[in-house]
Image (cartoon, rainbow, N blue to C red; front, side):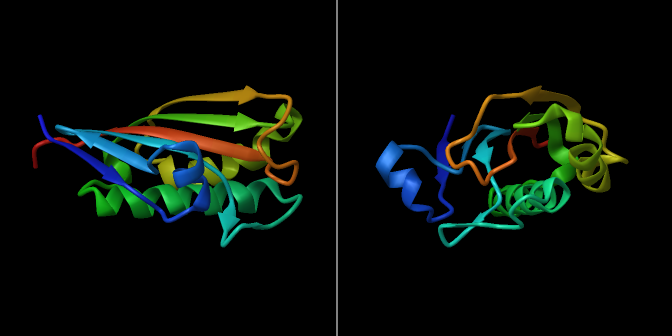
Amino acid sequence: MTRMNYSSGATWEEKVGYSRAVKVGNTIEVSGTVAEDQGKVVAPGNAYEQTKFALAKIESVLIQAGASLHDVVRTRMFVTDISRWEEFGRAHGEFFAAIKPATSMIEVSKLIDPGYLVEIEVTAIIHNK
């Protein structure tokens, strides 16, 4: 099977040695994605907007890889304050209400920058159309 790596151009990718997404066959794994734009935290303190921004970044790399949100079978949301689950969940629902992938929302003590409230990973499987 052919392996394709997809980059977002983030400086962390080279420093840490990872890809935004990796596609092998019809499966795509998307790395943990935060609300970052050109090295800056997007929507500081706003769980809903950070979740939307991260999911839009994920959607963009899926499209690059020949997939769509409809191919997502699993999401994982790492959040720094689980008491704000409704904010994270509302944004997730706006992207996935009709798709309903398996999901997890897990509270973590912190992310790589204290301004990030959520980091999201997804798994997509491209179905024959």
